[in-house]
Length: 250
Image (cartoon, rainbow, N blue to C red; front, side, top):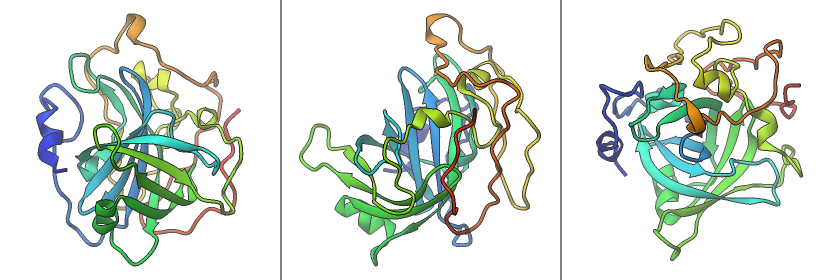
């Protein structure tokens, strides 16, 4: 998939999403992110930087650290690298209208000898995540001969980070701003000032439109209070896996 499909679905004069731009720089580490997207249906967008773009999958139930679950992941259009720092509101009437949370981010390593494009083409991508919430070995596996042809599974491998019964909704806060989905939908400010590391390009993207109201403004959430501490920030660049599993905020 190319960024032409991404651009064709969006009117950039009306949405704060970043316009398409292919990044072929070899200096950038392999970036991954997960965005919690409260659109028509709440889902998680899982993205891996491969070939200068973010290869993307929509995961209705979200990723998991539980190796016993295999969650469905729909392969969707490529997104520009800049989308990996996007958090804010897509106004009503636009494709994907709703609130977007930067739920996790970090770097990843491909496992095996084959490159990312080759693994993608054969329908079996194996990788190791170094994120703020997700760590360890995973696989994305194409379910060939099914439905529309974009049906994949995201699978956690058994390793030191495997956690039976792990609940994605226990971690429903932004790694960029510390906000809940409701706070993002209401355009509330970040919970605390975020340290900006040298070379970082992340920013909180906000719509100048009013947040959606009524039944569509679901804002699924967390029940956390404003006094809850925000997560740590992640400096860009390669780093090793965390020694401890993340702890959900109270």
